[in-house]
Length: 278
Image (cartoon, rainbow, N blue to C red; front, side):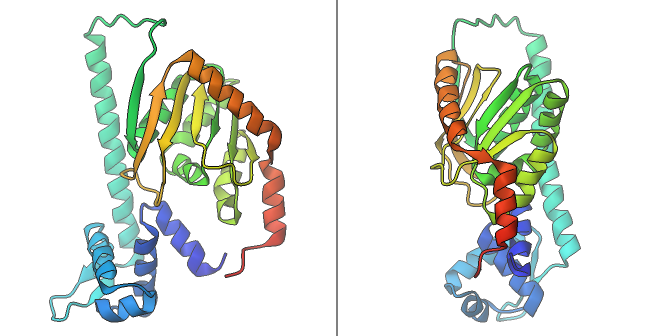
C-alpha cells in the first residue's frame, strides 16, 4: 500500500467517505483550489466535487474563501482530526446517556421477561450495530461467534467493541470469527488476533454478516453495504433472541469455519506478497 492509499484508508477510519478522504488529501498536498480544477485533478464531475466539499466543510475539514470564485482549502490535519474525533465521541456519549436513561427507567418498571417468547427488532445504522454489539458482548457468559466484512474489524477497534471482547476472553469465554482479509485489512485483523480472538480467513465468503452470542442472541444482515466507516452509515439488520435461528446461524458458521484458514496464515501470505500494484 503506497502512502496516499494508506492515508486515505486512515481517513476513512475517522468517518470520511472515500471521496471525502481523497479530496481532503488532494487539498492538503496541492493547496487550495476552486472546484473546476479540483474536479479535473480527481477525474470526476464538478457537481460531485461541490457535494464532497460541502460535506467536508460540515465536518470542519475544509474552509471556503469569501472570494469569488470560491477557493477551498484543507484545514490543518491535526485540527481536522480533532474535530472528527470530537464528533464521534459526542455521538458515543449520547448513546451512553440514552443507555443509562433506559436502564434507570427499566428499574422502575415491572418487566416480566419470558424465555418462551422470542424478540425481533430491526437495526438501521452502524451506531445501532455498535450499541447492540457492545451490549451483547458485555453480557456474554460463554462467548460468541461471528462472520463479518473486514470493515467491521475497523469499527470494532474504533468504537470500543474490542475492549469488551477482551473482557469476555479474560473471563474464559470463547470468541471465534470469520472474515475476508485483504492487504489493507492486515492491521485490524492483527489487532483482533492480539486480543485473543480465534480468527479465520474465508476468501470471498459472499458478504455474510452475522453474530451469535451465548448460542441464543443473534444479529444478522438483511442489507449491509458499508461504504464508509461512520456511526451514521445506514444498514439493515435483524436482532433476535430466537434459539432456533441461533442454531441455524451456528450451523452455517461451522460449515464456513471448516472451509476457512487461520487469519495468521493469510496475514503471512499477504505480507510476503506485499501491497497490490496500482
